Amino acid sequence: MISPPDDRRRAIAAIRAGVAVFVVSLTVMLLPLLIGRTALNKYLVAFGLIGAMLGLGWLTNGAIDLFRARGR
Image 1 (cartoon, rainbow, N blue to C red):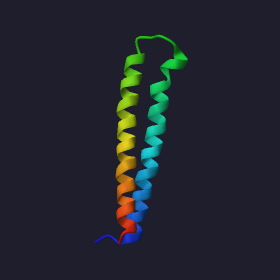
Image 2: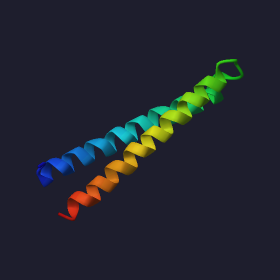
Image 3: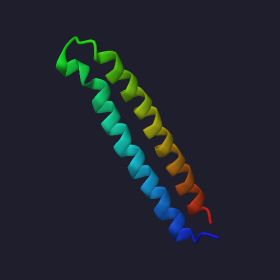
Image 4: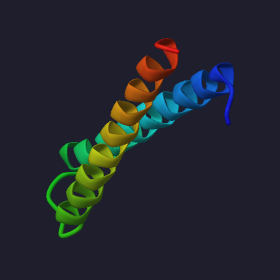
């Protein structure tokens, strides 16, 4: 069984990873505003959107794990 401090550390790491992935993906998604109209824009927005959803998922799961670790 994993100890509560280890659970808390893993939850915080998941939150940090989620925030990092979300920020990078948001930057990729908004990059077409800087580079102008190209054929590449739809792919940048698609990958950015998928990455942003992934980052928010990690962030949410990390927050849930953190609240669960506090309850022990």
